[in-house]
Length: 300
Image (cartoon, rainbow, N blue to C red; front, side, top):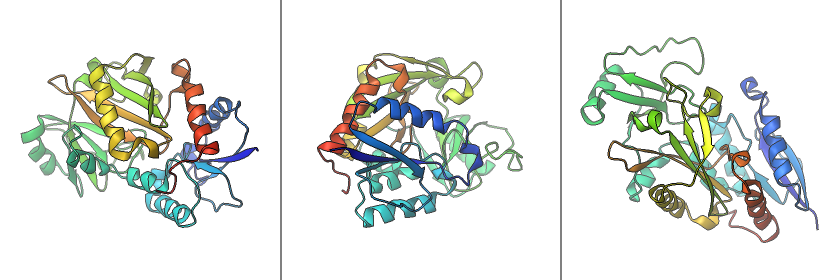
């Protein structure tokens, strides 16, 4: 029997997300083309007009521009017992990067982090006592390196930056030590489907940059992950529960001692890098097939 699947797509009121997402959606459609499933798409911000066997928020770009409204949508889906995978409560938890506190408390090695109500030069100077003279500052709710910057002791904060993505965070934020390995080696992203490891991508920023996203011309390549990286990723996935996740991307970088530290756990709309690894699309499709035809822990 043919199943129905809905991909959430960006809010049409967010013009900056109008360009590339249709091509990403096409890639997911292609990956799932071998399944007996009819695929639909609709903005996450609009009411559902019908029921679906499964809702997947993988293209819900721009949720960070309206986080409370997005969480409200997740709460409504959970209350109405709609099958969304990753589950609505996990997605809501993952909106705000203060989820890292939970992982730290669980013993997962995370980049040392201070959370502040608002960034100031005084707070940054205080943080240098523990983190060193070079810091990374980012909003607790953000994506695509928006309002993320490297601050060095003595820098001035440009709160009056004209571009929306430029300048420091204007609200609640996080402060971390800058990890030099992000430039020398890069950021490792380990991908999991249905709780099982699929592939790893090493993302190295272009010369002089610290941002590892493809949008900023980073160099991406698929490599077998070091055992220590795989162990950290598995610990992170286990904290959530492997059987509760359709997909996950675990991002990490080495510290000065060469130990891997968690940067972020991406559970909403991460780039899955399907085109970078042989068999990745098939593994993703198999995970979706399990969720569609064999059930999943979508409401827990």
